[in-house]
Image (cartoon, rainbow, N blue to C red; front, side, top):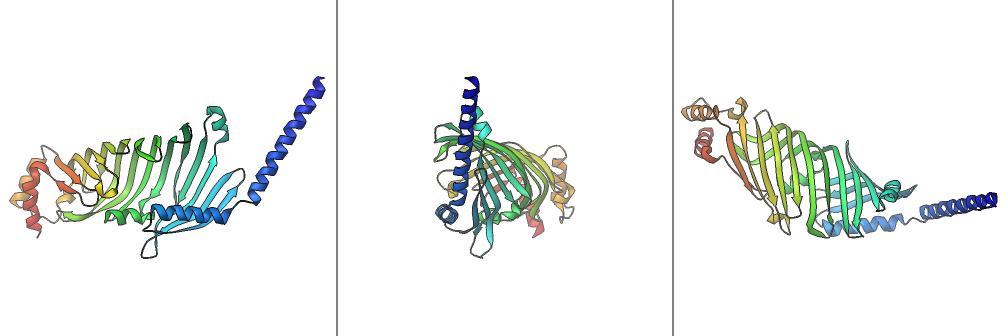
Length: 309
């Protein structure tokens, strides 16, 4: 009796494995690659109509991994403003069975950088959590950021992030992140003293908030021009044009910060004051055209700007 039951169980498992294998093979053979490729491109055009999107291929890899290759968004100059070399999405079968929730792994490759992580359902099909890591992502590979900000932005990003929310309800999203940008440059629309570009070796900060407001915490900057700390927040409404930032901090200028200025009375006065205290600053306004104020040093900096003219 036991032997017969065991044989029936083995045959049942064999039939199930055969059925699943045949189904997987059928899906692979009949996978609608071209239709899905056109559908994805159409969705991207709807989300970012200012870009022309191209996707080289969409393939189904065994077992049940969806791979997209060479996804690019082109601007008016017919050069890619944003690109993904590859995107792979696949179910986390073991994790899904253990947690009894749908878990999906993803990995994005851009040049020498990558973004990888996990998305998990929380409450049915509407609420999700997500987490991931960013490694060696070069901002120069996504010129769209510089285009949107209207200034040079370079650097290598590393980060960890996590969040949760309903994708269709921005205001209910919760997120946190730890971000580092190394070996970068930030262009200035209005030069500070003689500097139109701020080079830096490191900018680090922590982020936490929701879909309407993000707190900026534990910010630090290290540059050949200065070193300093900062905190602040960013808020936005329904569109990017309504975004507002407020960042406050203190800088310790390096000798190169005053490069090009003669040793005048104004320079001597500022140097003397900065021996005893850091240089306070406040950055505020929209991210594209923020204004910077040096608080109680504003008058002295106006005098220094006049000496450079």
